[in-house]
Amino acid sequence: MTSLQRQKLRLILTGAAAVVVLAVLLTWNIWRRPTEDPEARAFTTSLEGQDWRNMPRGEREDMRRQWERLRPETRRAVINSLVQKEIDKFREESAKLTPEERTARINDAIQKMRERRRDVKDEDRQRLRERVNSEDGKAMVKEVLNVYQTGFTARERAQLDPLVHEMLYHAEQTFGK
Image (cartoon, rainbow, N blue to C red):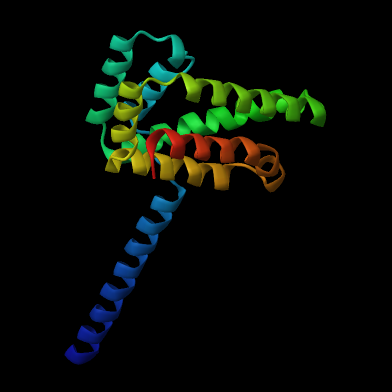
């Protein structure tokens, strides 16, 4: 074997080895489970089961400060996790109901939302408007609506659309455009 042939063989073997290494790395990245962000899991766990309407204002402010310290990726993970849990809860509860009962529950939720909108004080309305119109608030709304579009089936969205439309109307009336 001449030196030119040895050099050509070495080049081919080096290229093949590089391809094998890249293939192994790619396969490993595809098959490994993505690690869950412990910060997102801890924050999500602290939020689960909270009754926001009855939570003292100081606790809500503490949660908001914690939220603001989270990285954007962690916030998205928390939103997705919480919305997915709500979707699962909705599916579990709605499986036990007749279509008429589901419609009645949605209508009750719409009515309660309208009552709450009437009860919002002007100072709270302004504070909420500022929060929702911030970049972070817009990103959160966008993420939630995205999960709504992708997380629910077409039939579920058809059932929930009146409630979602009322929520959007409520947001427009409360927070402005």
